[in-house]
Image (cartoon, rainbow, N blue to C red; front, side, top):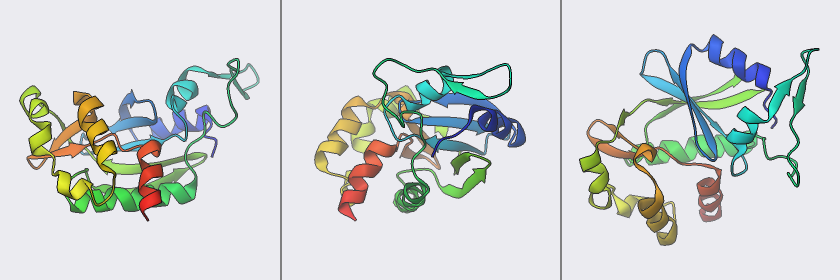
Length: 185
């Protein structure tokens, strides 16, 4: 699903978003209340970067994507609506196990599709250092391979985690992890 930049800008205004954070697969918009935010899930690695940096609106108001040499079609696309529903279900299951903040609902606004998710507090340095012991691995094994869990613990930076009700939460669940989860279904 291709999200238009003008629709994204209208989404930010309409839903009163105050900050934007981007990852290699996701964009997170925080609502002004600090109680929740909206996550946009892109299909491909660096999709958010391509979307935010490489899309221009010409003088006639028509979007013209900046073409990167050897860029493949779909690098700026959001995951499909079907995958977004599977992602919502996956995040709900992770929430039940206290591994991810609660997803509240799927939002559709023009060409924008996102999941509204409860906001978490940033992780402290002390908790980050203890993440191997604080994250309930046994529950993650229900959804992901041991190799993926090891990768997450070894490579996810401090901003990929959060705290909600004194529980360590994974925040960076993306299209890559969704692909593995779907194989286990």
